[in-house]
Image: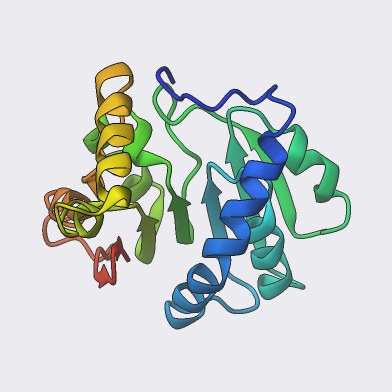
Length: 202
């Protein structure tokens, strides 16, 4: 994977990830529960970062389920994995390698937007689902920021930041609005599901 601007070795990287967890985890947990997280199922958490959702999933699927948590760098995950018998950690690059398969539920958040080949990433995730399984891909969509009043200082700051990122790495700042039709182009008629879930795909 190339183009990701946040260095894993940065002293404040765990702090940054914790900030995302505080802001986003409640909504993610609500989506996952609605989509059928329960004891005994097999889950895959892609780009698990600091591991908050992976650890929460590990608690939900216990005692007989399994959660496989992947990332390019897994040391944050490995620090927590020993506490959760149902959690397995896998170092994995979604841009380079296929995923293990037969999962009931797969979750990714703020991952695919950074990848140079977003359709390939979605294809690999869908292929890792068992028939009837569900993919929840949460990706940001900055349209509401862009559509704030012209005079808004926040609008100008965010547009400048997003345009800079788009010029320097593969991020698509409107990927959240594009991920659903992309997922629906994969495996047409398959029993694996891609359904609308707010600003995400489920």
